[in-house]
Image (cartoon, rainbow, N blue to C red; front, side):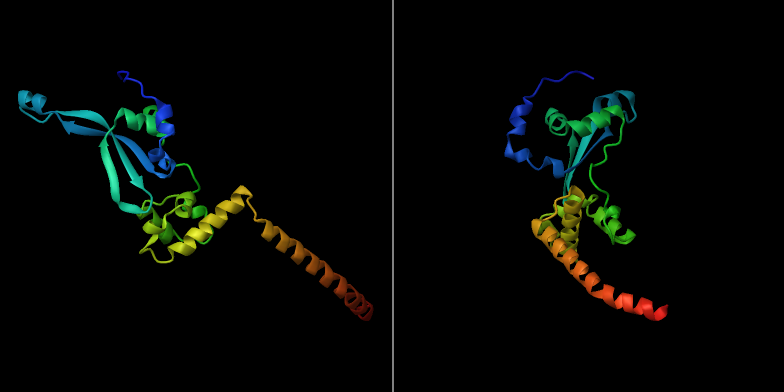
Length: 188
């Protein structure tokens, strides 16, 4: 593969247009395009392979970009590009939807059809893209809570509630001890 001119990656990193790139679904692939001059010369269809990219927004099935790979694509999505060149899986990083408790096979399939494949994508789904999906707001809250627990981000108020409940259990246990001792004497 020929080396292409370099591009200043620091310019792209500071550009707000690319701030949400980590939330996109990006896939590189090969696609065959008919080579007109070679086809005319040969008298039959001759095709050349080209690198293509598909970029989708989770939850938005109507706006998928597909086109030939540019230098900008290679730089913007360098991890996916490197995986593609290495012949590795370009899978998204994140928690698969089926790991979220209570997710049925059909619900996972429905969300996958909407290009939502990870718990992180579900939690980060915008209000605009959530309209029209029955029960999506509850699913988004559930996904956000799941991720918070997974990261260990327990809200201070929740830890206070746990301490109150522990004290109540200890108090109730202390109250029940005398009654349990009386019952034990009766049984003996």
